[in-house]
Length: 157
Image 1 (cartoon, rainbow, N blue to C red):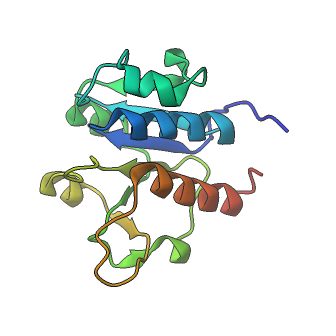
Image 2 (cartoon, rainbow, N blue to C red):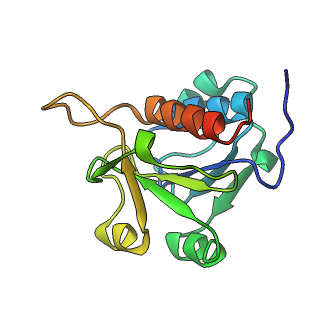
């Protein structure tokens, strides 16, 4: 069953992504599951990077991706919307959170997360619980886990 993107589709936002293969996998996940993708620039690669194209295949349609030239513009645009930050520094597990249809779920850079000033701007911070002494999951895996939970809770599937 195919679903069209609607105004209340969940949104996945990537903060200054720096690994093209991960971004490509996120593009495919969003395309297949009906989420909107938003990218906060600058990216650590060009969109014509062959590593991105190899993974994204024919799933990328740039008109379906919303780009923000900076975090400042992103937060100004989203001032009346709920943003959820996924971070290993959160105390609340994603499974103990009630997602809403129009949420924007923000993921940090693969190499550095988001800066402290971004943490301070966002009330809702969640984590994916992991085994002790494990640092983090791959970005694309994290997006898939959280998007699946969001879709399940909001009855999109």
